[in-house]
Structures are given as structure tokens and as C-alpha cells.
Image (cartoon, rainbow, N blue to C red; front, side, top):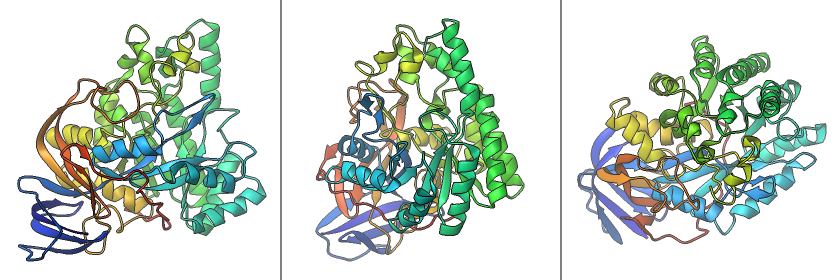
Length: 460
């Protein structure tokens, strides 16, 4: 199968130019002006942007949480991602306490196999790092799992101590992997939660009030200190507050290789959403929580000045009815997570490019190129170049869309961004040379996505 895209305005992280793109099988094989090549399919991209497919490096599909699971599995979640212009994800395989890392990896591979509609990789969440499991980290790197996530929050389930983080960092220094950290002070938060419950303060708003920005900043400061001690890069996931961002910015100014992401929910939502009546605030329970609105512009500034390198989603949806309402009388029982995998590219285009905060090139960089570079997939993913995978999006900058749960493709009964108006949408989505989305129609096959065996991480 061959595809010729004509009259393209190609936008990469570095360039903005006019050319045609020729795809043979799954690769970009030629880029040039007025290409005279026969193709099985011709796409006229006049008046549109052609960008590399989006790369979302933080998703939780088919994730267990207590007695329930996130509502999107690898079929529905990756298909929804494609509708939004994302062609690659990295999900999290989770080692439960007492579980072997290898068994966790095999389990998540089975979850994705035959279901994923776009290409995917895995980070590994570590909760139990015995000497035997420490050696398995090397095996995982050989399998293409070149990043490991550790939690400083959620005592008695996911949280590990500082010595475990340091041990993982020292191993990462030897095998070339990257340590990712969920940075919140779990012990302090646990004390605040216990006091809140004792005081009868159980509404959704207390999810945020028991996880103040200071607990995020304190954990970020600690993990940066550990990374300095180990002399390794570190990646901070889902930064939500200026307090945490300042710790990252200061470290980067000192020359330390600290990388970080934020998510659309922290750029567009605020603590006021948790105050919504009739338990509607439960829809906005995820961790870290949304902050006071003024933090939003500080996070945008972090994206502008490269203190933050990536926008991911932390997509972890639970239905409002039947899942979120399990915590109607106690915010600690509300399943923790929110949907967004379909809306990331739209929202960052609207809030970033249309609102003139960032350039087209920077939009591509933070949603595609930097994720691919940091997590060892570049230039296979994240760019438009001869020899790269033919993951392309024809983006209509003038398409108007109102985000709502009735029309989205995520398997969840609400949207975090219900009623948001955006200008700019994916019109055609090509994954490894195959047109899988065309003007709102799904043309791909379920299970066509391939596992990405990632290289050691590369700095952007």
C-alpha cells in the first residue's frame, strides 16, 4: 500500500514548510515539492497542517483499582486516542506487591495484544524491588521497557521509600533506563486524609484539600536530591502546581537533567470543579488534584520556557455512574482518575496555538517529538522524515468542535471538558502508512497496533 500526501504544510518541532510526502508500506520514503509518484491513495492536504502523530506517554488502560478497572481497555482507549490525533501511547504495566516484574510485563502484554489499534509501549511501575527483581530491570530494558515508575504516594499499595528509589536510580545509571516518579508526600497526605475523615469532611473537594501543593513540592524536592546523589536524570510525571514546577525549574537552571510533564487537566481545570454540586465534583477526582486557577498560567509558562517538556494525559477513566459514585459518602473511595486521551491534541492546540501562547512547532514538540525523544522512540516516532514510521495527521486548524460525552469515543459516561469549544481537529490519521481515521470515520482494524521495543532514553 502506498499513499501520497500532496500540498502539505508540514509542521515538525523544527520546521514549517511546503512539500509532498510519499509513503510506501509503513515508512515515509520521500519528501519533496511536487512529487511525481504513482500511489494507491492520494490525499490532498491543501489548507491543512500535516504533523507527526501524537505521542502520549502516560496512560492507564485496563488498569485495576480495588474491585474495579479503568473503563477504557486497549481497544477503546487506543481507538479514541487515534480519533484525537495520537498514534502512539506508552501505558504502565504495574507490579503489584509480591508480584514478579516479568509477570507484570507479560500480563500487560496480554491486555494489549489483539486489542490495541495504535502502537504502544510500556513503562514498568515498581512496588517491590528485591535483589532478584533489581536484576530483572536489566531484562526489561532488553525487552524495550526502558523507563520505570516509582510512587512516593499511596502508602500500603504503591508507595516505596527513598532507599528503594535510590536503588532503582543506581540500577538505571548502569542499564541506561529512565526513572519516572509520582511525586507527592504520601505520609503527610495520609495524615491529612485521616484528619479530614475524622472531622467528617468527606466531600470531593477534600480530595484536593488533603493533597495541597506543598506535598507535591516537598516530594519533588526530595526526588531531585536523590537524582543528584545517584547522578542520573529523573522524570517527574503529571506536574500540577507552580510549587512543584519551581523546584524543577531551579534544578534545571543549575544544570541538572530533570524532565517533567504536565497534563491538560492542570492547564484547563481548577479546584472549583471539585466543588460542583450533586456529587459532580467526583468527576474531577484524580491525582495530583486540580489546583487554584492561577497555577494554570504558571504551567503554561513552564511549557513555554521548557521547564516542562511534555503534555501527556494520565488517561485513567472511570464512569460517573457505577464507579465514581462508589465514593458518594467518602471521597477516599472515589476511583482516582479521569479521561482525556482523545482531547489532548485539540486542547493544547486551542489553549496553546490559538491563544498564541506557543508556536505550531512547540505544539508538535510537546505533544509528539519530545515524548518520542525522551522515551527512546525517536526518530522512528515523533517526526516527519524519510525512514520514520508513517505516523501522520492531517490537521484542520479551522474545524470547530464542542467537546462532549455524547460524541467522544472514550468508553466513559462524561467528559472533563464538557462544552469546551475548540478550533482544530484531526481530519485524517495515518498509522504506519495505514489511514485509520478519515473525516470522523474509523477505518482501522482492532488489534493492528504493534508493541514498540524502545531504546534507552534520549534527551530532547
